[in-house]
Length: 105
Image (cartoon, rainbow, N blue to C red; front, side, top):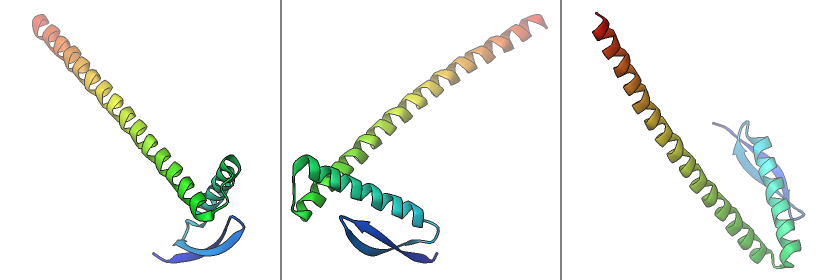
């Protein structure tokens, strides 16, 4: 798979970043999101040191990802439990139908 160079701007600095062909818009969107988060963090905390700003923003993003992973796992567990309950109900209903069919023969 070929890669494309995309120019992004973060904190007023332009840089070239390689990404897989066809993913340029996703990368540009991610860069805009990161830039916005950095500016938001800077205004909330008044941090002026770029390394600290990047560190705190990265930690917040990682925290959000871990939280989303936990939520997704809980949702998956819930869906799995409901599917198991549905399967038991369907098995019971099918068993009742089969028994009814056997008694009428």
